[in-house]
View 1 (tube, rainbow, N blue to C red):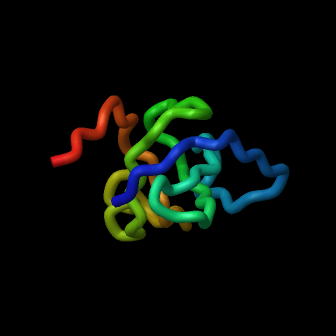
View 2 (spheres, rainbow, N blue to C red):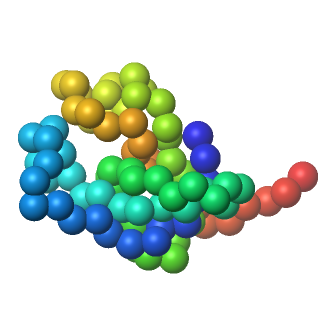
Length: 83
């Protein structure tokens, strides 16, 4: 899992049926420079920091079925406490 910042929403006129009804967001990892597309299950807004699961099997267990989704926003980060 990674922590990322939500950049905004993604829309598409044509997509795989597995994405029907799923909001999609563009996110940027806090420790990285490659933006990702992730399905949003928590209603995250642009500028918020989120926890992103990046493992297909775990995502399929949460979403059910076999959607072609690899990255899933599973939580909004309130605070990070460094040890």
